[in-house]
Length: 308
Ligand code: ADP
Ligand code: MG
Image (cartoon, rainbow, N blue to C red):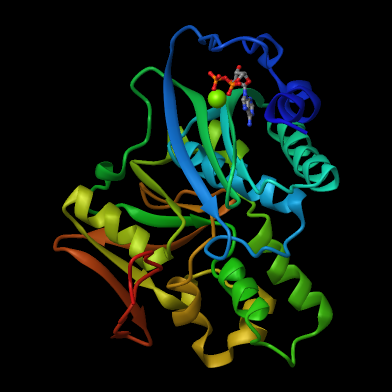
């Protein structure tokens, strides 16, 4: 099996309009009138973002969804992606079949298609570049938070971090259903893609995807917007499995865990929808986590790749 067989057999069936069946040197990206093209890229690596034993279809879905998460957080509709794939020389047809099936499933779920990529042999790594469209001038920035805004977050926080903890041996007392639910959130994130594409743009003054930890990521919004963000710990949405796993530590563990791929945004007070109000924006700097009227010290606000 050489790379041309891999491309023709596994990836050509995923090719979208403009990709010429992956049979040319480059693709054409059809534009949407009245829109701007938004582009983002993210790679995932074995032992950092997934385990070598994870099912290949979930690895494919994670690689794609971490990119869709960035587009969603910017108020953007996803449309196309490029796939830069490095696979071991002895990769099996079964692995490639499952990997391509994961991509296909998500293409159908999210209405996107493959435009091209590159295929190499080496240590498994998957880099995806995703393209989306947003109405002209409407991409939601980190820098738009206003004094008096409320802070909102989609979904629940900490589930994926909980899944990683379970895979590393925590939570032996959890029910099998709770363990599975957390592990599946780690392996296959559930970014709110349709909310990002349709509701976020009208609601949000600023926004970010929660990838490294809620506190760390809101820190980027606070810095870019030159404001302080105050989080009411009691309002942070935690799932039952996260509470069962971490007990009294659940809040602090959840708000500093990575891999959520939810959206945190600020907007006028009183918004309602498929998200939860968790705090507000005021004068100052940094992110302040409050619990029982006191600020909780946060030593490590989120995941960092280059930290000992
Ligand atoms: P080059 O010689 O320029 O590197 P390739 O043989 O890598 O060309 O690619 C041939 C075609 O196959 C191109 O259209 C490229 O975008 C596509 N392609 C290669 N690898 C992948 C992949 N992993 N996923 C999708 N398309 C791919
Ligand atoms: Mg190439």
